[in-house]
Image (cartoon, rainbow, N blue to C red):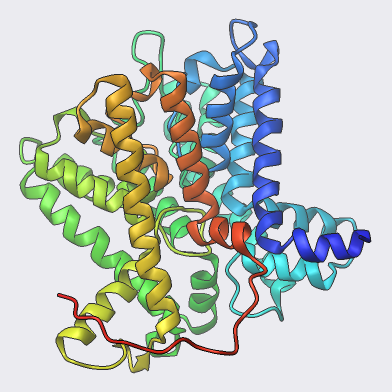
Amino acid sequence: MTKQTFKKRYLTSFRIIILGFIGIIVLGALLLMLPISAKSRAVTPFNQTLFTATSAVCVTGLVVQDTATYWSLFGQAIILTLIQIGGLGVITMAATFVLLTGKRLSLSQRNTMQNAISAPMLGGVVRLTKFVVKGTVLIELLGAVVMMPTFVRDHGARGVWMAVFHSVSAFCNAGFDLMGTPDNKFPSVTAYAANPLINTVLMFLIVIGGISFLTWRDFIKHRFRFKRYRLQTKLILVTSAVLILLPAILFFFTEYAHLPTGERILGSLFQSVTTRTAGFNTENLSALSPIGLSVFIILMLIGGSPGSTAGGMKTTTVAVLFSNAISCFRRKEDPEVFGRRIGAGPVKIASTLLILYATICFTGAAVISTVEQLPLSVCLFETASAVGTVGLTLGITPHLGILSQIILILMMFFGRVGGMTVIFAAISGTDKKLSRLPQEDVTVG
């Protein structure tokens, strides 16, 4: 078998994407094992560095060691690099490197790029890649500059590094933070719960990073002329707005009713924004009510939007399922939204993803609950956070055994790479049949 035939048959674009993520994760884990990566100058066990590297590349934010107090500046720089690569996508970064060298991308490379960034068509994928990289650098730089005075005031010269780190972490929806101290580890950004500037900037970065690069391009091209947006952009914007506002209202009247009004508004909005994708928190999550805990799990499973820095089922999946339900209620053949009809293909994929994510989340939680002897609800929170690549935690992740850590690693990888990417990589190449089996109706409901 020739090399070209092997690549065509076995190295499909989906498999290249998966191998790219695995390669970066393993390299990052090995670099974090170096003594220079830890403040103690000791070699960190591979299972801990693998977990950290996976969490960084998969822009999750779950950690087994406090980022600020355990890792040295070199280790933190490695983590930030992994976050940036994972946020933009391994293939996007590789293509950017190729373009910077002056080389042209081959047709197969362009096809891989199309799948990696969820581009609607092959044409213009190079221009889109350049747009994504330039936009990312500009927005992250802007976020760092705005937050820098506050962090420098509170942390001195180290505040410059903190501003850059948190800007990249927020835009890439990673949730890693450098706020920990030896006496207060894993605090996230609770110290800035009442700071409007830091809350607003972080929310802005999270939302911009989580609504997809194609949504940016639509907005820049058509500005506020909503009717000219692509259907996917409309679904992303409307669904994202609903998923931010409704939970924020719920949190305002339930979870954070004990706070002063200003902090109550900030906390409700911030947690509604960050719960689906980013993993930062400004309030104590262990005080959540059962209803709040359930809402958090649902939001984390939904995640961000396709073609963004976020993981999870995606907002469009929820939008398609909701539209399909409405069409069933109205006894219509196909889902209809914004004057357009959605085909059967997206509906089938959306249904598959819902079952897939729910099954993986519950199964993982059940295993961890059994192994660690922990309540199922607490484990569901962690697995939803992992598979949704969110990073919020009730505090159990640093204390989990190796088996439970491996489960979370696999779930983070699955959530970032994408459920359908994993499936297509595993079973791609299936021949399409020209014949169809006889149809027989089944009663449901």
